[in-house]
Image 1 (cartoon, one colour):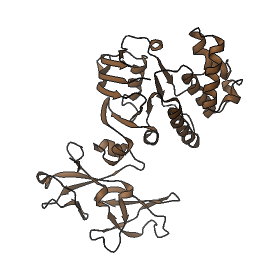
Image 2: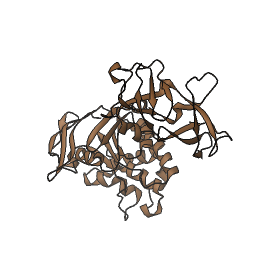
Image 3: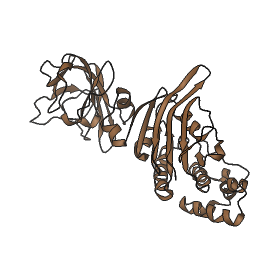
Image 4: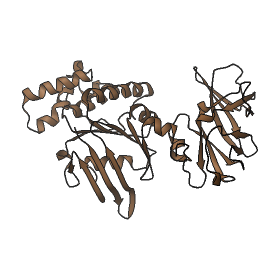
Length: 362
């Protein structure tokens, strides 16, 4: 097992810098997910850890050893790719055993490793089949099995589920989480899918433009996004972002052509009075108003998306489109007017200029 440390890691392609001085510490046996939009540098960072890309500046350390100059085969890592990368002419057993054969390991040592990995992944009955005879999910299990048999210090996953359909991706998320508990190895996982990040990670690293925007547990990143970018990227649906300004008394925010929304017990620095802010509201922070909701306001629904257990309800607030997650009521129809209120404990305020969270815990 191994701790992984990145210190000031930079990647340049010619004169263009695409990864900007990343510092990251991943604990032994931790499951960390790198997440962000396409082009943010997450896969490049993973490939540098694997040794598939050179490092322009900085150091990468695995299990106390700097690996900058080590070839991939000498780093004691195993990587699972997006496209499975299986040998089509070999059966499942040989695909899983091949790396061990190349190492010169004896057949009687290889077989128990392959059979153990196959049992963990429930593919023992597929060992004599070739990749063309397998489903997408089965091929991905074989790719993971090939990594498991190597007994590496670190597992690297590069968007391994992106080629699967929605149901299979959900099933495979469960498989990967179970695998981590069973094998108990350090895992670094790359995805652009924030649902994968939230469901799999012990800690999430949100990246944007080659920089780290925020590092934290799924709950920390969801409940206290450090920037507007994180607030909009993490969460499905995204966090609503409504332009506003702080009232002169500092006890409410004022939405342009909209309501005054009380801040409850939240403390806001007095020097922010009159400053341009952004009100962040998760869809579940907007509820149907009750009798005691003094600062409730009226809204006209312009679209609904029934999801069975609840209904996503769209309306406008201060010129911004807002999504509320409401109970599945028949009264929620396009054109209907409803009274809604905001949960004061679930409100977020961001500085419109810096885009940073005004953290109530500070």
